[in-house]
Length: 83
Image (cartoon, rainbow, N blue to C red; front, side):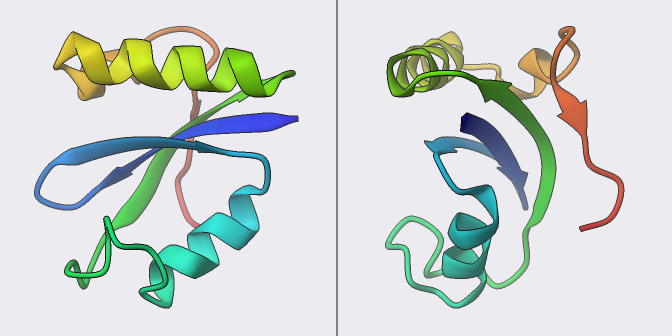
């Protein structure tokens, strides 16, 4: 199982992973280059797919659209209230 997830602070950011809990811990511990300079963020949405290829393709499609927040309104995305 793979996840495409969206984080939000002043903007929305999209990534994919095969282990969502581990990846969020890495973000929170500043182990990732992309979020190292940000202090506060929230996981707001995630989407579950079966394969790595599906996850990467969806991530690319979301990023290319230029409107990440619009994707969170589509069916299948799971909104996170508290994590």
